[in-house]
Length: 292
Image (cartoon, rainbow, N blue to C red; front, side):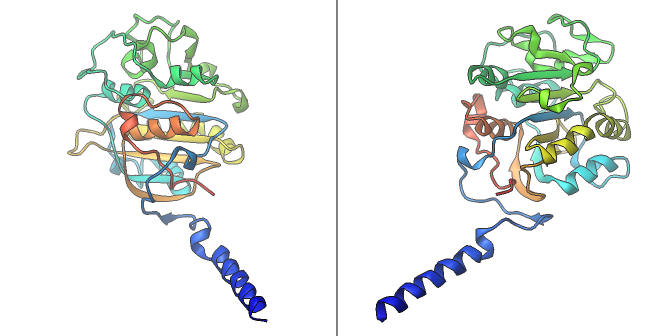
C-alpha cells in the first residue's frame, strides 16, 4: 500500500512539473531576460536566413518612429533587441564584422581591399551550404568597382574576399520570387538611397516593405528567418542601433540583452553548426528569442 501511494505521489509531481509555466514558451510580446549560458544546440536551424543591412540610423529613429511604420510593425510582431550596438564608425568596418567576425583592421570607408580571413560565405560553402549577397544597383560584377551610381562596394563585404567565387555576388534584381530557391543564407544590401544613407527613413522603410515583406510573411510559415539590422547609428553616443528578428522560429517580444554584429554572426554560425570566425568565437549566440 505504501509503495502504491509513493508511486502515485511521484506521478502527480511529474505531471505538475510538466504543466508549470517554466516548462513552456513565454507569452508573445513579453519582455525576456537573458537566459543561461547558451549552446549551439539552443539555436534552431532555419530553412533560410535573409539579413538586410540598413544605414546610419539610431534605434530611436526607427522603432516607434512615424516615418518607419513598417519596421515598427516588424519589431512588434518579431523579436526586438533593445540593447543592440554597432561595432564602430564608419560604415565599412561594421559590414566586415558582420560578415567575417573582424573589422580586418580597417578604420575607414576606403576601397578597394582584399582579405583572406574566414567568413560566413566560406564557412557555409565548406559545410555544403550556400550563400549569396544581393546588392541593389550592382553593376556587372567587378571587384575593382568601388562606386557605380548608388552602388557602393564598401557595403558589400564579400567583394573583398577574392577566394569567394564571383557567383556569390548578385544583383538584387536576381532575388527570387520563389523564396524556397534562396540560398541557405543571403545578405541584402539596398542602394545608397534605399538603405537610408542618402535618403530619409521613410524611403528605406517603404523599400523594405515593398521588397521584403513578401519574404517576411513567407518566412513565418516556412521555418525561415529575416534579420534587419543597421551598420551604425547617426553618430549619437554609444552607436546604438535597431536589430529585429522575424520569422517562423522567432518568439515575439523585446529582448534587453546586449547584441552586436559579432553576436548576430555567431548566432547564424551556430544555427548551421559552422566554425566561428574572428570575434564571433568570443560571443555567445542568441538563444532566448526562439519558439520551443
